Amino acid sequence: MNKKIIILLLFVLLIIIAKFFEIDSYFTFENLKSQQSILADFVENNYLVTVIGFILIYIVSVAFLIPIATVLTLSGGFLFGTLFGAVFVNIGATLGAVLAFLFARYIVGNKVQEKYASKLEKFNKELEENKFQYLFSLRFLPIFPFFLVNFFCGVTHVDLRTFFITTSLGIIPGSLVYTYAGSQLATINAIEDIFTKEMLFAFVLLALLMLIPVAYKKYKAYKQKESTK
Image 1 (cartoon, rainbow, N blue to C red):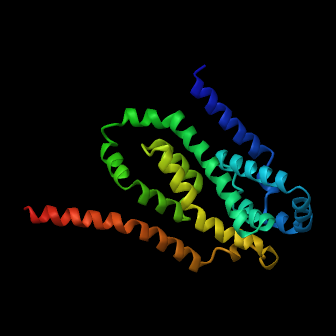
Image 2 (image 1 turned 180 degrees about the vertical axis):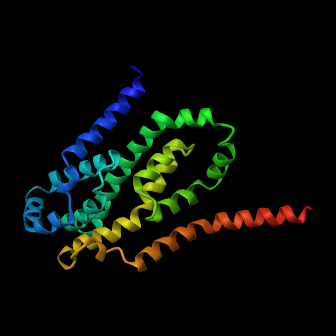
Image 3 (image 1 turned 90 degrees about the vertical axis):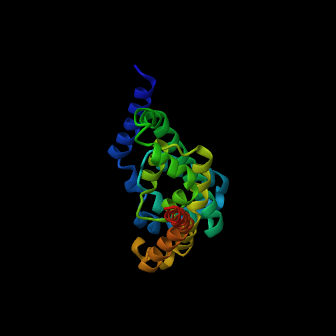
């Protein structure tokens, strides 16, 4: 059997297993709130083990599309504080994203690029010229699911280095917001209390700011084209 098919089947099987055993049901905001004292005591007595376990769980959840990232990020803030929590979240999320990126590239990315090379030529050129701005914008905008961006980038010509940089830096604002909220867990009654309209506006504004250089470059090119007519 083809190696790619075997890897794809294993990937799908792991996702099915995670869904079948409802692993995500254990990682809920309600459980986090109810287990505060137990978790705090465990971290105090097993700090290094907790850090390693936390990062590994985050990597697996991102790589295998288990929808528990929000609760995990809150947990990071509660267990380790805002700053260290954000660092551990960043490590886990970035490494998990890299695995998803490499998986998408290996399974379908190269084949898609080869098959539709001529049709994707303009898209690839545009992405190459403005890759940092576009990828940072995708990371800042919460309307684009994290896992979807990982797989999308794996299908494009984006290089691993650029993907790694834009992921690790681009998720810092969101990580800090949620780890800070996690550090104040006792004052939060629901996840909805964290993500307000004002915060959404701030992230959208941040994403748009990243696109200003792209818009200016296109405007400048348009003006030059018009002047030569």
